[in-house]
Image (cartoon, rainbow, N blue to C red; front, side, top):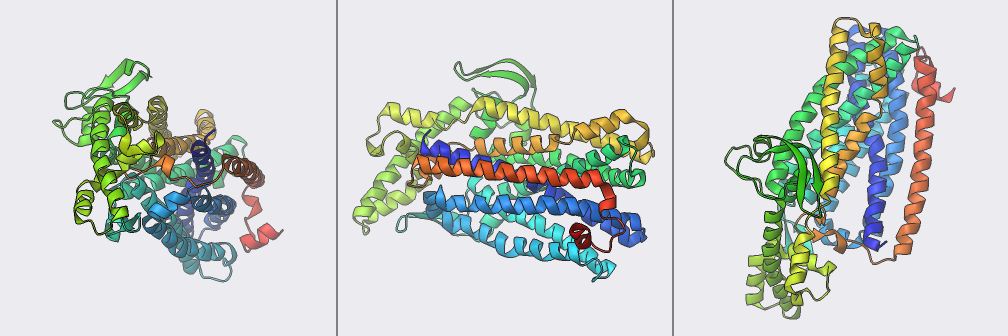
Length: 515
């Protein structure tokens, strides 16, 4: 495998491993705040027991998330050195703020959550719990601001003197519409994950006839919070479709396997069989108007198909070549005013010209066939995106049905009467992780061939190292992360089997863990 593919594979594996722990951290942190709020309001010890027990599982998951997350950031220097040099001025700021502001906030208050039950008043400890939840969400915010800029680079410009992207408007980076939508969509998915986790473990207890009061109360909270979160995921997913339709048209066309531009408003393909070789989709079942309404919020704007977008990329490559030639002139003579003016006029498409670097180093001499090949390289893997998106959406609607049923049974006080539902809840435990991972595949794989959309091709962002080095570290990461996953599952299983007795009635979780 080429170093580019190996570097992509390593980052993909480490990111997917890390995101096993992230959504549960986001979801459980807020659920802990809700449960402890009920405890403070009612003064019933069972709610304190609930908070402690789910808090112990949160702590195990949080520790594993930290261990897997830290190593990811080192890859920017080891495997993606040119990427870090080219856009570090923009990308580094949100990561630094995340570390200084959000992660330190989490680290401070997680200690108070675990070790200060007997040192703080009820209200003070509740404040610490909510601060922990806020810190967890702020971590996600700054990471997604950085990721959102990769999807939709705003508030920055290319500086030919330094050969880097530099920030021109940090507020534009901060309030990037893509980043904001990704944040609320991602944290809502995390809330769904936490809710299903609580729902499934509680169902396990009820099926075993254990901890009935504990499990019923946990399921009641999870059903209410999970239903609201699942509905938010669908609504915010629709908003994500709109922002992608405005800024990442090729991703939308690939998700739909839409090869040709349809008359407005475009239909949404519920089911079909994409054929990349023949560039068509067989047996398509469509919902009229739906894609047009999602992607354009109108009935008269067209959603461009893949062929039209390839033609657009072809034109932008030709325009970017003008900027590339002007940049080379400036390198030789930085005082050339005409070359600087020419570069400023065409710099927006410089990244498209760089797509030719995958084909030949002297891109100014590219042939028409090579330019066409570079334009076609902007098409991501259509079948992967097509099916990943539909499975993810299908799971989203299943979660709504599951939480609606749980909410109704909870309102009727009949959660313990229907074993079929308890089994469905238990067997649904892995599904939110599948949906979340598929969501990241759609978001990141759909951006290819760009590491910064329209600015820097992925193939140019890698470090000047050998494929052997990357392969060696990749194997090491797989072994290390798999070991952490085994430890995480072992600890979670151990304390789930012990049940709330592991923490109930003890003066603090610190003592419970020590014992």
